[in-house]
Image (cartoon, rainbow, N blue to C red; front, side, top):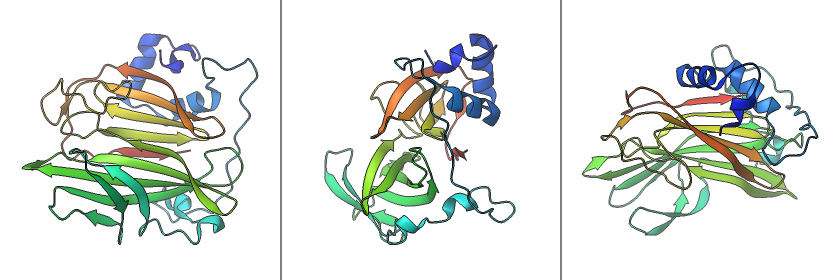
Length: 249
């Protein structure tokens, strides 16, 4: 059961309607700040204090989160190796970007850095780096792309990964619908039925999706761990060329 079902005066049906309609930021904030894992003790979760950031230019809601903190000055995520990556055919490559891109020789796979955000997701008062990449696979036709997220912190002057996540593709299911970050919590919303380790939902025609899966991740002091997931009923949606929503609070 999605933890939201025990929150406030909303009953289960009302909550599903809210999530399916908009997954509004007011609800997200209330949920993420008040959420208790099922196996948590009765002690309250410590309040999260976000570093004060200067305001960005009008119209750019992410400008403040793109300001690189001092501990990341020497890291160029646009020209960076994100480590080994296993392609669909089982081949292992080094996901090393040059000028934010990696194009494989046969043009079957391409990777691009979409953006990098900086905010405190561990509760220690220092910002972490959140790198957002896209991956498009083409075999005759292209799959519409999947999304990869890498979160890094700096410990003793060294970059340390604390979260790595890849969604499914829009062609084969489990493509990214939205990603919400608030304090030590991340909510990933995927198109289709995407529980467990499954990165595909082939129950629908290509580039079509019914229902959404919400996955809650929480930082446990070392890494982000999945706390819960729930499938919410939605109408059939065409997801080709879909642009996901990113929210940071």
